[in-house]
Image 1 (cartoon, rainbow, N blue to C red):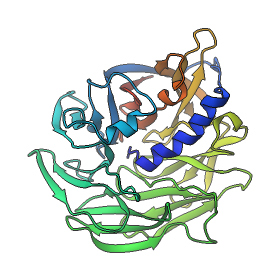
Image 2: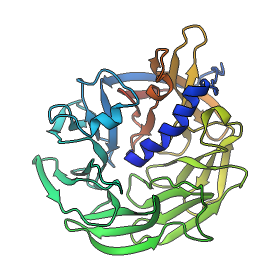
Image 3: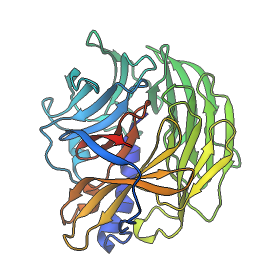
Length: 386
């Protein structure tokens, strides 16, 4: 499930601006290894930002469209006040490339997620509330193009669609996630609630990731402080909880396979890019948390797992010393060997004051691994040619 919340975005601003002020220090040169795969660009959506992929891999949800031609640090904040013509949400059928739903919005999108059937979409619309809660919550029935506005509660909760009229909510307290809850739509009647990684207390300078939900809607994974946690989505029962070395700061990014069989975590020593020296990506068995592989790769910018759990996609910002551009680069790794097997460039960002932030992008495999999607200022859809 691909989704990026306002909190996720703000979490990138401070370390990136720090890097801009001090020079973009973690420039990683191409490794030059033999490629066993080739990433072929299938199509591009200009100015569209990926919000979610459907569980069956056939549909994607975008924010924006071809009218967006630039990207800057202020874009996110401008989204809050754009006109109805500029803010929009679109759902595209990947096999045909057809837009099956499009709607203008009064403001930007906090997050969006498909229900298990792929026929419904939940979307939270931005607001100025201190707790970051949406000003509108929409439930979209895609085949009929029907849009229902859902009630807004008082408690600061971000929601994600699961299945059978159930949503997963992350409940915030003092700017940290305090609990997970299952609720029944359309009124968000609470069914179950569990603490969010509360064992041993919370670290003062810790960090939480939002939940990563597997495409089959059976696995929920997240990181908090020095813990990686996995729950069963049906009842929020704890599946496993694993700590990692305290010499590292946090698990910055997480990914799961479509069936939740594998969980990947990008472990870093600091949130400040120019100071990062120690990092790795851990691959864990989704059933019990056993570490099955560890790759000495920096996954700070973004990671994704193929459906079969054999390929890891990593996003990195690579400095081109000749052109002074930052190349938003996709690297694929064979998890069994740790070998880099393919690379491609998502975008080239020209030299400028906001260059490093403009190069920010995410990665997502569709649930059938037919496509790899890279998305930042623009979205590109890739196929893997063997």
